[in-house]
Length: 259
Image 1 (cartoon, rainbow, N blue to C red):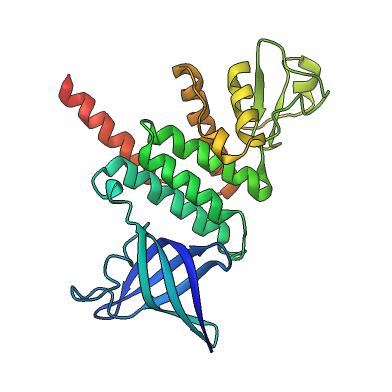
Image 2: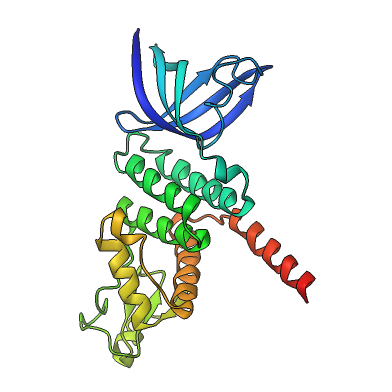
């Protein structure tokens, strides 16, 4: 039995029983933990706002028999702009789903907390939340040991020419334009990547958070990165993530109305 004080992000908030909530908190010391917040749904509860999704707060927890209960919370950032922007909220919700999936088998993962701090902030504040989300998920997968091989040709080891490369998802790497190299791979889901996109991906993988989310990309490279990120996520996680499809549907609807 002990009392714990920790900062944490509410990655997920689930209502249960009449007035309680179960919180998935991402913390720097303990990784991802599940906490009960009793009475948090009540309008009079001091935990009502602190138990909202994606809030960043300092929590006082009671720990007993491998269970956590929230005793008190002091809000640091309620991320209110998210609640006013359906696109940003959907992007952060998508990223939260990925983080929860990754941490299901390794809840103590130490890199997830700083990653979420940078990524959620950029999605909330940047003018292009869709790009930030796709950069973030590629960065996160890379940190978990699933970095795509894009430094040079996976077969011959040579640098890529101005023609760029072809990425083979089943192999997790890019192949140069030489026929001899591509013959060695066989059938696989593929995607062509320009030299600019390869450079952007390399920069993203090898740089710290404060740099990798600040890239200035042309529209062509931006779209290539987004397309690649979506396909690579599905391949690595063996799951179809669909929250971002809601944004595409909304954008298509708005464009149709404009026309």
